[in-house]
Length: 342
Image (cartoon, rainbow, N blue to C red; front, side):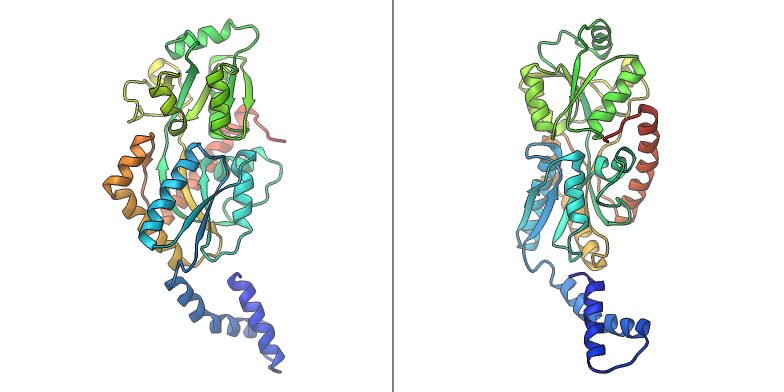
């Protein structure tokens, strides 16, 4: 139960005893009575299993990070942290479920750039407000976005792929993890910058999109590196370029699109932990401290590097600033590309 609801319940009990305090004063008194209980609850956290909701199917970058985080937090707190996949609508279904959850720290969101900074600009209505309904807890990682192609596509560079796409009839298809997700918008930026006419084929997550790419039913895809890296290393997919301002540590031999002469397609994609608005500050700060310590530890950083993620420890306040900054940037991208989910 939220603190506000608990306060209102306490207020009802006060009035039932015949007290005739003004409403505002009575509510303040009720909340003051509950403050020690809230502090005690935060001090005992977590006293039961914690859910980490992921708005995408198993096997994608968000899911992989959530499961690594759940393992690390479980080891530290000696309590279960359980990953729950609630896929669909670019991560917004999962985010909406967390926004409506009790703000007691036992339901958390593995948030992504798409659900927290892009969704407001492509959906006419959302079941949550990305800023007002969440407490940023901790940034986990930034993840490179790679342009990958089916191994049968003859292009060996971004320039060759552009030339191939311009002469394709029917249009070449590019898959994505969903409308409005980073891979989709990156693809839109790519085709707009090069004057291409590609066929966008959205899926409910990276895993089903990669399945179709591996089968050759779509020819290319911008993907978060953790989900496509195993197929790249196995030679089943070919990485053409990185859509960022620097090369990926996991694939240092692959150039950025800018190095290939394709500008305006550098994106930043982050993954972080968020809680419902009003979650006690002691819980938020405690989780942030623990997560940052885990990100600094060698084994966590090594595990992330193994699937292409790059740790990004910071305070809740800095994480909130990143969300605000990226919201402004993606609003411009959505306006320029005309992407809509409705």
